Image (cartoon, rainbow, N blue to C red; front, top):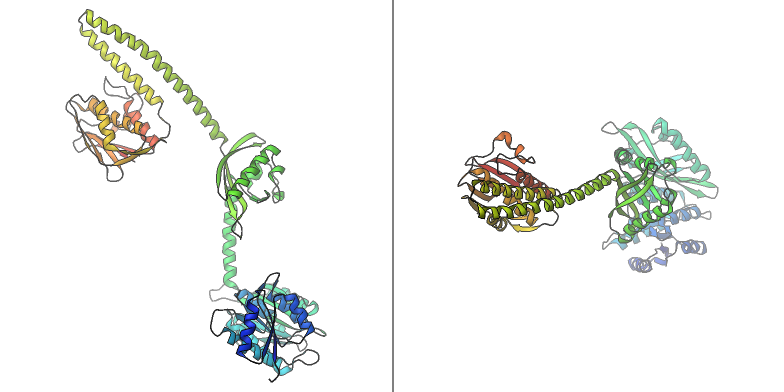
Length: 598
């Protein structure tokens, strides 16, 4: 070819099209390249001047390369068109071939990509030999058609076909035959090809082919074949068709087929998973909902709809102002805005009216990001905690009354005891009687009872003011406050424990006191570490019978005349407040062993 090959390159990257044009002209002196960044301008240039080939990118702002290809095909059915794109995918390739692309070349990073592009452009341009009616010579058209159709087999297993409307001839690639489960030598008519599809899908295929021929309407449909896959399942194909116009109407239809069996099976699995998820969403006993950035509901589950009397058919598009009083809706909207503006989840209590009266919900709200990564919606789960709040308030009032009662009892009992102790001291100076010691012991026991009652009344709250403590240091301090009466207390611990210091010390004191009180004269008490996070306190006294080991923690239980029956109950309360575990067993010497796992 002695005449220059005029190429129009369309790419919305201002720097890329001129660069490609320069490389093409360097590769082949016959190429003359013109560039534009605007597909609309490209169509104007094609109308104003003569070009031998069009090169276009896929993604170009408001247009894509296939839209430009269709526009070119409607005006110039056989003008070579090369899609040179960095947005390569199986789907794009299939659409491009169906629309009648001449070449599909990815913009891969390689040293020879411009040489490859130049060679393909020259080859396509030399086969493009239009006559006065813009119809290619039959030989050139046939060679280009066969070359294009066979090349598509290299692109992700896509089969290509072409139907010549005027001659009623169907051309298939080998890959198309393979996808239909027939021999590559099979040369079907259009009617033969339709019969390869499932009986329930044949009418649909006939209808879209007729619309393509009569109205120039492209199609993209999913069809089942009559045959089965290797594992006995249904074979699904995705079929595309793109009409091409001539002077007298649609002259041919380009198309592709692609096996989508795996995709359809995934869709079936996903549909099953979605159905299960939808079932969970609908039946979970909490309110679950989704709102967009403007506060419009996108989803709400059955619990929400029934609680707030919302019609299932009118969910989408409602706002809180359609469901709740204005002041409540404004508060809820403010909570949503906080989530969207901070891009952080929140947990809060929200009080809202229902037909059964005001209810309190513990609501967790989380932001949902859009494609650009910014929050576009709010997803929330709200649990009705009204009954829990009512019980909590009743318990708080009960605890307040108990605290008040304990303080009053402590004051009202201690004062008479102090008076009695004073009078007893005066009595001891005036007379000598064995009864005085018994009375003093009774007073001491009453003091311990009051102390234990107050301590027990103030237990039960979780231990929140915790810190890392040395068990050895706490145990030594406790040892100093306990009357040992000849007992020995050995501390063999070097562990640290996260605990409330005053409660941990009281626990250790009570266990020391219990060992001294019940272990007999000269009892030996040991504090040591457990291998699996925790500690033990054991003695070598008579121990606790197996059948009594649960009973000893009950309020008021004691086997000693001097005991109050509250010491081990307090131990249990302190352990529960920390979330620890307690095990009462027997020491190696037969005594009691208390194991506390932290």
